[in-house]
Amino acid sequence: MSLDTVKERIRKLMAYATQGSGACEGEIENALGHAQRLIDQHNLRAEDFDPSKAQPKEDLTFTQGSTTGTGPTWSKWESNLAKAICELYGTLSYYIKGETQVVRLNGVVQIDEHTGQIRDGRVIVFYGPSREVGEACELFKEWALSICSMAQLRWGGSHREPGVSYCVGFSQGLLDKTKELNAGRRALMAKPITLSESTEITLWDRNTLLKDYGEFWLKHNQKVRLNGSVRVTARGDHTSSAFGEGYSHGQTTTFGRQTARKGLPL
Image 1 (cartoon, rainbow, N blue to C red):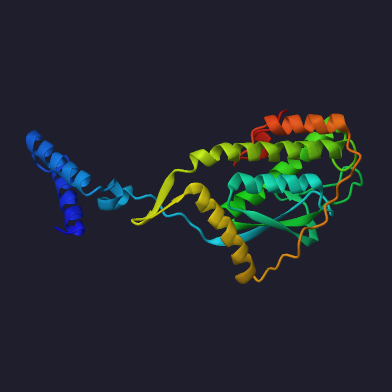
Image 2: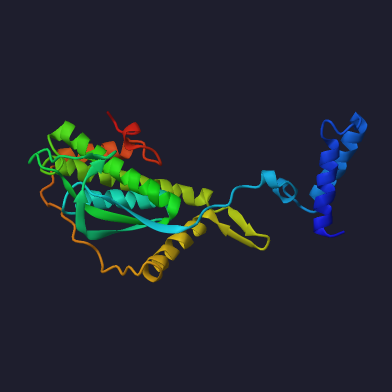
């Protein structure tokens, strides 16, 4: 008996055993028992003979999406935040463009707290699987502006000391926390997942392959060639108390695929 014949036989047995078929209780039990034996004998899953039980296919279309940083120069803490988000997803990478755009949150133009002028931000581009790119852009924007709000609330600003130190500490705390969580997740993600009847791969390896493919996709499909690391603005005179408080908040806050404000230590 071919595998297709077995699957069709199981479908008929399951249909016969459903309510409304007119079968008596004993006949239903016999039909279900026979169907289960065929399932066990041929090592089948529910989706193999019932399409309604099949898991939706993952959309692995690649794309790139952009958002803005909080200022015209790219800072150390924004770099930490972008790295933390890429660590969180495991499949994404990013690069910084030379141009700036007006900073917006939920469509509202943001104003610089010191100059009163419209704020321009350096453009950051995330690339990788489409759904995750969109989430990452929103997550970066939410966290960047929320960290700035915390620095403003706690230290009087986010673009001057000691507020800058708070932002650097917060983002470093997030990055270290995400790396630690990923180290623990490696063991959980080491269980093989089936890609086809003859191919298995761990979820961790799957994420690594997707991230590596993103570099190829960016270069060959989008014709984007990365010219090396962007210059990062990082002051050497950090305020230790502000940095320490920021690091503590970054380590203890909830960081995940959610809006930033849900996890802030307010």
